[in-house]
Image 1 (tube, rainbow, N blue to C red):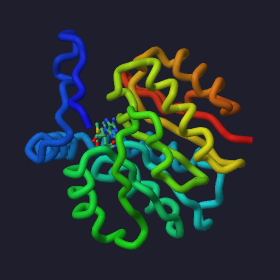
Image 2 (cartoon, rainbow, N blue to C red):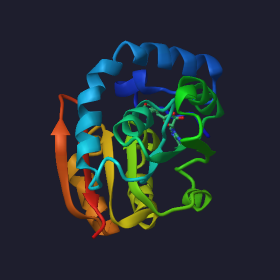
Image 3 (tube, rainbow, N blue to C red):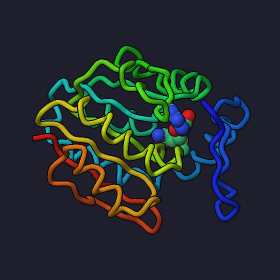
Image 4 (spheres, rainbow, N blue to C red):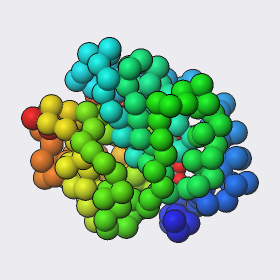
Length: 202
Ligand SMILES: C[S@@+](CC[C@H](N)C(=O)[O-])C[C@H]1O[C@@H](n2cnc3c(N)ncnc32)[C@H](O)[C@@H]1O
């Protein structure tokens, strides 16, 4: 997976997800802020249109060390998850951090900016989710394609919900979701710089 960077305006957004040191520093910084995203994660869990006792399958796109996966597997005690990510280092950290959930999740390594990435994933999933990951690709065209790639992975009756920056603008992202085939596309929650948004596959 290539390094992602942005314009100088956002130079703090330069990432090197393949580096063990970068990943461990990022995770350490994120740990201090982890409480702040429990609310959107809980809103996401309640928005997934299945009873919490069902054995649903969840796909977490760009799962990192599994913060969102953990929240959802705790909310849905019979669910299992596929954690997709492009970084071996993140997957290694996720295996360690989610040791208590062993047997309920697997990592699949692939780069979602590359055409064909979704063929490595065996759907359909009742819920495809993502958290502060897809904006990393920077290119609006690639993000639009990723949303198109996600649609066939979602089971009819299921949903795709993304917790991410409004960059590109949310209106554009919601249009791409509708164009991909999702219905009832909406924003479920927002903070100063992040939104929880998505749609349903009817
Ligand atoms: C900011 S972290 C978020 C991780 C996790 N979702 C969370 O909320 O804690 C972004 C994640 O996206 C992954 N990522 C970035 N670009 C990617 C790509 N092109 N393909 C696959 N994963 C990618 C990184 O490896 C990293 O784990």
